[in-house]
Length: 247
Figure (cartoon, rainbow, N blue to C red):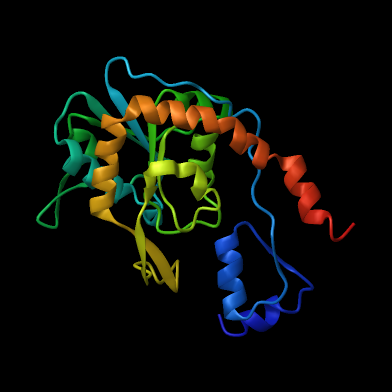
């Protein structure tokens, strides 16, 4: 949009939710940028997860293509094939754009796979939290987020989370599951002009396998660090810090 920078600089301050967006704004010429991260709501309590029958991966974010739903499905199948001991749930916001592809052609729906299921119904927050806690590992190969609440909330429940690391304000909490990416021109310039961080497909395949093979240790690691995230991203603490210079 022509003139966007001049209009933003009419404000005394510009607030954003993460350090990386602050750096990008500042590099583009935006003045006096402050960071006010999202806090975690206390109802996202930690749960110590154990695999009893099969390991359940979860992706949320459909139908927004930048959240990497298709990559999550394709990498899952590349990692595990028809292995009945693992399952991927794709939780969509009513609509779902992921499909089964072969040689670039759509050949069916993802829930035709024996170990992939699709959930499209809306869930109130208490049911959504319970739904997340029924799964063992979050998979979130997003090309870019203003903050990224979905993986953030998953980590708060002690859930091992595979997530693109570079844009995440909380990337230190991803441990060995931070997903590699590279800066590219946006695949969706109409809705997301500019640059985006493309997750590395092969790295995602490897991290699926790593999470499956080392789940017990990862579950303990993420469960132990969850209270630290709750403390660091406490809303009252963040708000006091954000407004301190104004008060």
